[in-house]
Image (tube, rainbow, N blue to C red; front, side, top):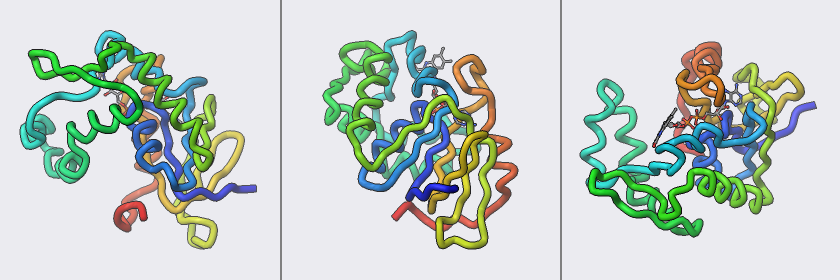
Length: 197
Ligand SMILES: Cc1cc2nc3c(=O)[nH]c(=O)nc-3n(C[C@H](O)[C@H](O)[C@H](O)COP(=O)(O)OP(=O)(O)OC[C@H]3O[C@@H](n4cnc5c(N)ncnc54)[C@H](O)[C@@H]3O)c2cc1C
């Protein structure tokens, strides 16, 4: 049996958790393969959680090399200042270091992850499944139950949109094993249908 969602987010790291929070109001399923979401975030900034960088957003673009054009669209609509403002709404105030790095005043990555996970838990339309890896994503012909089928070893889910937030291949012990590359490659070059409505 499959279950239908507006958006399925694959991966509950920094990107997946943040995306889920931004999409509150939609029917969301976040699938995280580790037992707990945000494990890699917990070691970020030496455990203090370097949340973003200060300065004009235009200064960020050149740090992305060939991907500059791709990230520019996202960064321009949700800037570093918007990120700080959003964390403030969760009760997390930030400070700017002299080198431009932005940290939460509490300097605790664990507390940031806990706050994000609690905020998701308080959202009735959002479900989080942990300890289960996504094995396959398919685009299905009959879209009446959603355009995508997302399969784990235990279940299959349907959704209109998928956010692939599995991170890179940088820290296998914390979940960053590079699954996203294979999932995206298997899905192929499918047409983009615009922003989540
Ligand atoms: C030691 C260290 C220090 C760092 N310090 C900083 C810092 O100070 N500031 C900063 O901005 N960045 C820092 N980084 C980088 C930061 O960790 C990454 O930028 C960030 O974690 C990327 O977030 P992400 O959500 O894209 O990926 P991740 O955090 O890697 O999250 C991806 C998630 O997807 C899950 N996943 C993977 N495959 C599947 C699957 N098949 N099914 C379901 N779930 C899956 C993983 O378990 C993981 O939880 C640091 C990294 C390290 C290793």
